[in-house]
Length: 207
Image (cartoon, rainbow, N blue to C red; front, side, top):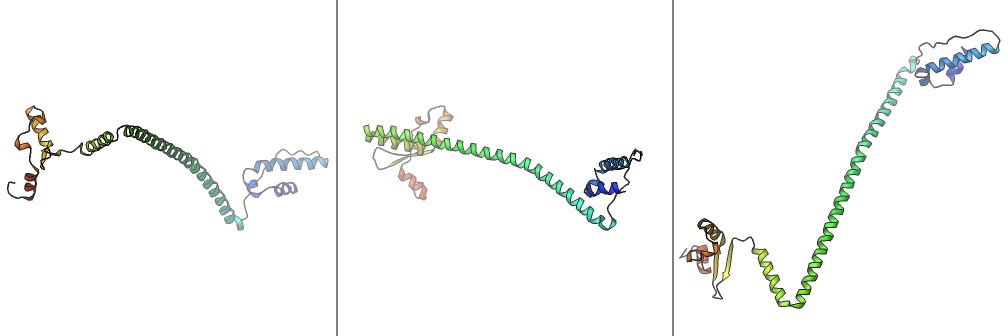
């Protein structure tokens, strides 16, 4: 009894009631055998068995709560670690992707800026050689870009003060239907003066 008390007194209760039962029994057996040998009794201990050990009833509920709390702590720690192992790599991947997108956008902006700078330098050189020609060319290019998709064009009829109205969409359809070039149709039905067009819009005579 003194041997078991000595061994148990040196260990935690959780260890005694859990995985330490076989270790406690073996150490108790060794201590008893050593004590018997010291007294020269000639008695040999073959085995020590520990009966079921439980907490006192007065503290059983508190002990179970403590055990449950410890298990919950371990479970939450495991879940937190699993969550971190999932979130951290994805966050790093997202950060790397955004950095790559930013670098690509930076390279694109720089390339566009350099291209515009080179274009301006070439244009400046041409302007210094022939200012008037360069201005006219830029003006024409701007008109082409502005009216490139327009289906209707107003043209000055040789400074007569009237504007010729060309319904290009109708001319194109007519030319496609007849197999001729759209520009071949130049009869009166396809050219309307600014005056007639204004009357038609106002709903006046001649409309």
